[in-house]
Length: 72
Image 1 (cartoon, rainbow, N blue to C red):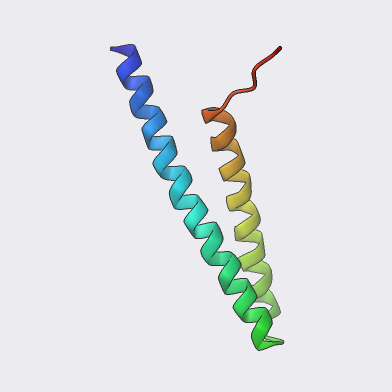
Image 2: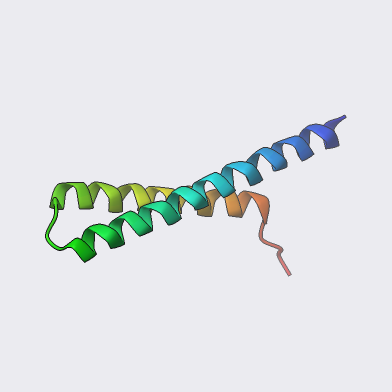
């Protein structure tokens, strides 16, 4: 029973990881589009970049939880 709940937790993490990766990729495209248009709203650009960095940190935490370090 414990293994089943652990598997369920892992599946949830994997789904969340994919959602975060998609959002990160979308933000990257939005930032690139704003940059290509030139100028733009600097405050909006900073907010997008800050959100993208936050997503990157969340992604790293989940990846670390899913793939723990193996001590040799």
